Length: 209
Image (cartoon, helix red, strand yellow):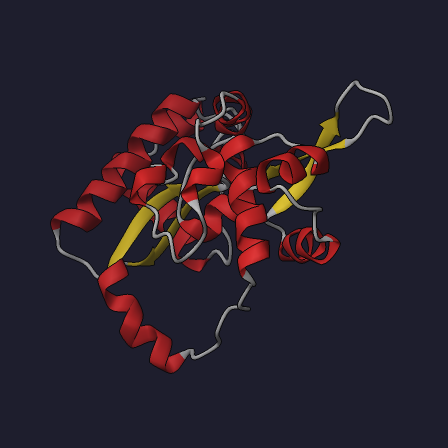
């Protein structure tokens, strides 16, 4: 630690800012620690990142430092996105109501099987909906239920959380706040404890890899 004890706070912050500003993707604590041979304590690193976040917020910058499921990254503040979208007009793919309902069931009830989804929706699972969500990187198979046939268990991914700007599943909006035009929230009542269990698993990896 001798070499790192000599690093003054400001140069240390500058190194982190340079890495985060030039990164194409979110950087975990392990990613950032590589710059210092992995010999920095996670707590010290987190404190420095929080200081950087506060500094950028205090000066009213249009850029903010956020912590997502995959790690830390800089991004434009939400109020500036409508203007940036005019420069980068790429539109995300539009999904059918069936696909969105399937995603919502997985997100709020995870981990779930196809049978669980069918029981909640009352109709057979559309294979194309599952495939579309897997191709987007929003859901994945996280295990198999120990029942006859060992059906696959689906859950949301860190990519899903990153795309929504969230750190964990617990940050999903409450069901009562969801627009019924998007999907039928009553399908998911009551909320499943499975979300909390899967959330703990995902939170273990936030910024620590």
